[in-house]
Image (cartoon, rainbow, N blue to C red):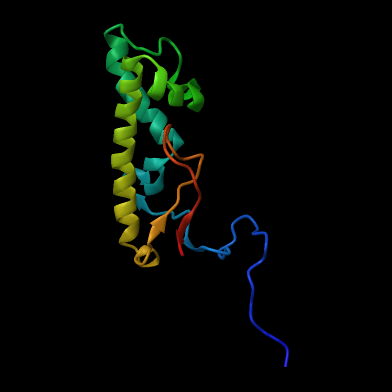
Length: 144
């Protein structure tokens, strides 16, 4: 009788739910709250909004360390560099936005973990496009 065991493909396709070392339980949840999609509180656009929120009072006082450059136009590379070797005031603004983002992300994760599909989640990996400056990057929600 032929071996009927299933083996994972050696090269995973985009969006595969089974990888050699990881099983993807869930991703791209469309859970809503009073502000819209819950996951939108922790994405690139949300980070840029938080950065702008921290810059606004500095701009009114005439001391925005980023000058006239729009928050959405400041590159990730520039933000990363500011955290390690840039102007301390600019680094403080970026760090404050990161802290606010971390609070929003924690809220999103707590809400997701209440869902049946996420209840047994052991690890969460983060998509590169959604991570704020200075954060490690990975992809999807997974369990080994």
